[in-house]
Length: 211
Image (tube, rainbow, N blue to C red; front, top):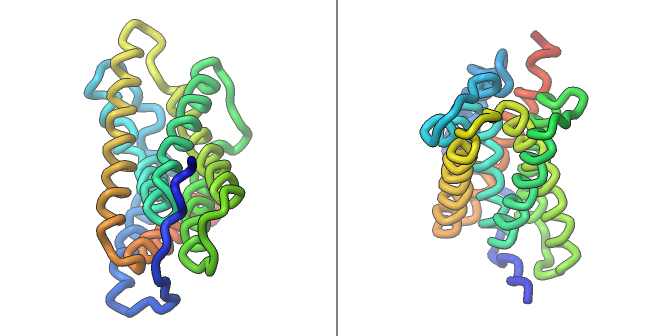
């Protein structure tokens, strides 16, 4: 049986002091806007390299935070949806697959997950399996795009298995950790994080065009 979606009293107000997380996340996006995925092209062999890889790419890190926020706001099952998307995207990328404007799509995926979280925060109804399925589809697509980029960069030698293990460990730590932390906080903190992620995703996507 699917776990019920999270229920809580939501508020549309965002106090001025709540803008700090938005500013911090947006600043991170601006700093690395010239490199939409800072870790891309730095992949190498070994467990340590794999662990650091998702953390060094700003867009990957922000997406993992978004997945954790979505799981905290909707259902922990979205973490499993994210894992499925990661596996599918990694295999596709490792086999040489790609997408046009993949870097831009990776940035927009952050904004899409953030929008999913914000919509759930403002939704007056909860618990529909169909709603969870749609949310899962967004998570799968977003994570698959990022995992595809990882797959394109991963080593093709015997170190690949340890590299992937490290990358999986780091991704699980960030997504699962943010889920656990946000579950213990008031819903407004999830909303603040989602707003910051939406802004950061937009900046990362359009910075190359504006620059």
